[in-house]
Image 1 (cartoon, rainbow, N blue to C red):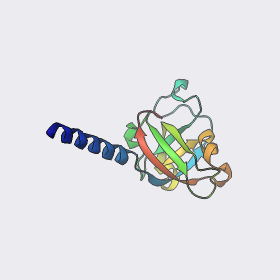
Image 2: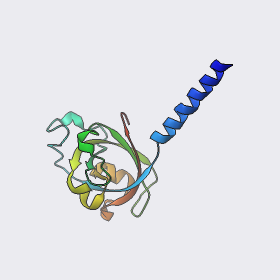
Image 3: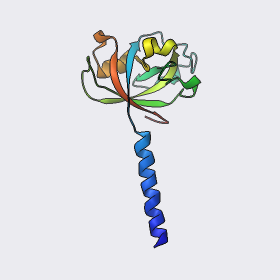
Length: 138
């Protein structure tokens, strides 16, 4: 019986940790266009970019997505929630660069123009997003 309770407790703790890691935070995102190299994470290496071109620079203000480079290669899940959204899809972006000064006025992300266009109209310039991460894979 004790073994069965221990198994149930382990499952409950695992589910709680999974839920905490998936918690979403509200932030803002803008976008940037080429040239994308050199990047702060990988320099001129063209292999840093995912095939779908969904990548981002992390802000080093508040919130600190850049985290001193610790999030290079990590993935964040982003959903547009405010003005300018074209859908409610969630995209995954890979951090490949640092954008100084919190991506201008405290924005968390500077998305590639391709990633931004997948969830919002570029004419708005910046958007409110829900995001979660970092994750080791998309």
